[in-house]
Image (cartoon, rainbow, N blue to C red; front, side, top):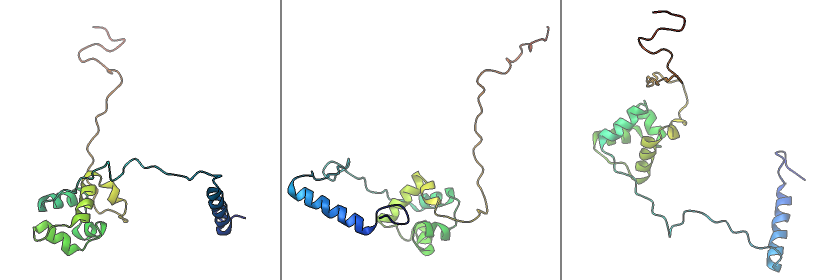
Length: 146
C-alpha cells in the first residue's frame, strides 16, 4: 500500500525496517554505514570574522536593505542592527557567521525577502566581445575601392 504522494505507507516502512533489523541480527544483511567527508578529527572550521560598524553598514547597503529589513533577514532586531552600525554593540557568533554569508554570497540571504524593491541598483555593463573584428579601423569595407 502507498500513500497519496506515492511513497510507502508508515506501516509498510515500519515492517520493512523491522525485516531489515531481523536480517541484520541474523547476519544476513550488512549494516549500512554512511561515510562523510568532513569529520571533527580532520577538519577545522574557521571562526566567523569580527565586523566593524562600517563593514556591517556596507554589507547592508550593498544588499540595498533598510535596517529593519536587514534585521529580519538576520533574525535580529532593528535596534540591534542600529547598535552594531553605531559601534555600541558587537554581533554575537551566529550573527557574525550570517554577516559573513551576507558578505560573501548575498543571494543566499536575499531570497528570503519578498516584495517589490523600491530601487534596483544599476548593474555593471557587460563587455561584449565579437568573435571576429567587424571591421578593421581604416581598412576599406568589402566592395569599397580606394
